[in-house]
Amino acid sequence: MKNLKTILLLCIVAVVAACSESKSDNDSLSVSAEVINFPAEGGSATFQISCTTSWSVVCDNEAIWLSQTQGKGDCEIEIAMGATTSVKATENHIMVRADNGATRNILIKQAGELLSGTTLSVTNKNIYIAFGGKAHDEDSLMVMTNTSWVLYGPEWLEAYYDGKWVTLSPTTAKVKGDVENSLTVTVKLRTAKALDQIDDVFDELYIKPSYNENMGEKFQVCQLGKHSATPNVSVALAHGMACDWKVGIEVTDIYYKLTKEVIPASEITVEAIQKWKQAKPTTLNSWRNLDANTCYYLYSAGSANGTVKHYNSTYCITPSESNQALAPISNVVKKGDSWNYTVRPGSNCKAYVKLTTTNSTYFDDFDAALAWRINRLMHNDATTNKFPLYSKALSWTYHSPDPLLIVTWGLGQSENRMSGLISRYLTSEHNSAPNRSMMLESDGPDERCEPIDMEEFERSVTIIK
Image 1: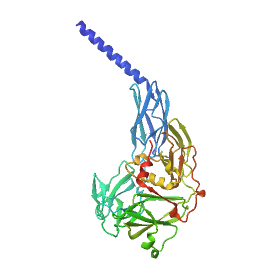
Image 2 (image 1 turned 30 degrees about the horizontal axis):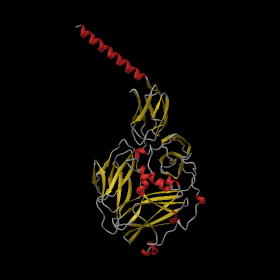
Image 3 (image 1 turned 90 degrees about the vertical axis):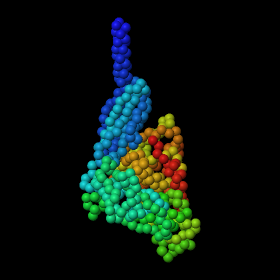
Image 4 (image 1 turned 90 degrees about the horizontal axis):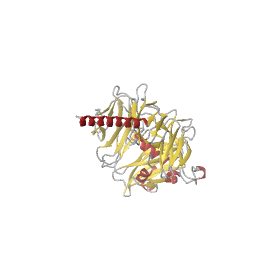
């Protein structure tokens, strides 16, 4: 009996000691806030960590930026997040963990984007959407909506719906969307089969609010014939433009010509086309040193082992250089293996996106190519969360010993359109933007084109977190 009492006493002492140790561990770490609230347009905030040991910080949403993720002792942490893409309020969590195991959690709340009236608009396409000639050539619509919708289209197109690819119909709404948490919905589309004919196929695609199908947006869709080639994702800036290509199933090369003048149809012969510039279907074409506020015509023709059947033409207008939305980069300082800098939206800029890469090869006035890359990432549903819009001046830290190329692209105040100019900063000893007035003038716009291997470009110009 005496031995039993001794054992019980030792157990009680051990439990008390463990509780005391646990309490001591918890007392070694504290944070200044349990909840941080953000408005729908995003912004920045701070909280304080008080700790007697080393600590680390993790967040369950990589789009939320933290000024510091590890340290020792007391510290103030800045947190920033972009504008919401949700019509409902969202919640994320930050956990601070001390080396001794103590933890503190912070709840991050952001208000939803409340829309007035009914919104249903496609943000990444104009009137015309081209698909390549191969089977399962994909594209997508980015739909901004706060209402349910339906989709109609030709039977040679499929949409990804309810976990599978569904053949569209011009008369029956087989694909529908309800109001979701996300303000922007991605609708994936692809061709059902290859087009094994010379002529292109044209049809119409409709996205309409389900409560009133007399409204909505209409697009012309096209699947390219065997020898066709046309620009795909194109970006026009004040002094440059860039595009990749959609092609038919037999196209091995692309002939193209950029000009300020319309070429009469009588002058577009096979012999004339074969004197145009050439590109491969995997090429990204980037024109630089163009004139602002000017209409340019882009002609293209596919070639199947030297055989040219017909051509396509399109045009773009470079925007004016005045009143552009810019987000200048400043206060760039290197501290150890990290770069600190500030981005401050200009007076005409309501928000901005940014890209940072260690590959500075594309610093030399590849503005349109960089804008093309950002545009592609912004509209890729796999990376959309990595490109939030930031509406306020923020300080940033990137951990890299190598020089960085920092790029920001602003969104205008009066309309939902990206700027005709981008801001660039190369963190090298000799940082200076190219002087366009010093560049050698060429005979025509085509001489100012830089063909780029698209796959290599996409690999090298990446995001650094």
